[in-house]
Amino acid sequence: MIARLAATLVAFTLTLGFAIASPAMPPDLRFDLVEGGQMRLADYKGKVVLVVNTASKCGFAGQFTELQTLADQYGDKGLIVLTVPSNDFKQELTTGEEAKKYCAMTFGAELPMAQITKVKGAGAHPFYAWLRTERGFEPSWNFNKVLLGRDGEVIDTFPASADPLSAWMTGPIEAALSQAM
Image 1 (cartoon, rainbow, N blue to C red):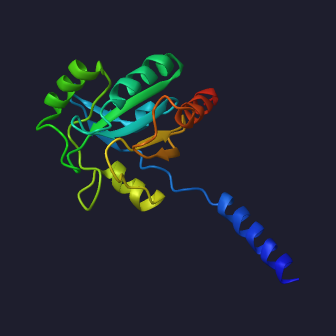
Image 2: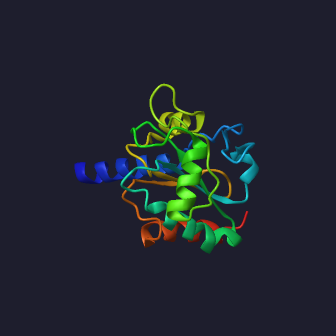
């Protein structure tokens, strides 16, 4: 009897959990780009966006090459890869312009790049502050990844160790790209 009641309670909790949607991302979130101008996330509705906090001198910086491969492989299907350099972990160059040039020369990465941005703590960029508050996610290191669906909602988050070309990441990316808007 108690086991059946517990199972019913768990099923009800799971059903209720799925019925309550996560709060929508604020529509005015934007990143200042090294290339000039701003990238307003709401402008990319209908695209799949992978947001990656990066650092040029991090041990995971080799992922820039794989991120560029992802963008090349899936860009025509609607994938945008946004790199967000941060010095929160003390591994970024002095300016966004230096980081952009370094990544292009060292890794062949020509991805959209935000200016150097705080991704954790009290002064975090509004996108990362929203992720922390509403999704319980805060980058624990460089190269944490956030996958946004065509509707602008968070599909999944990935740690630094997630290889961009692994099935762990390409599976959700391909699934998101296959979704109609």
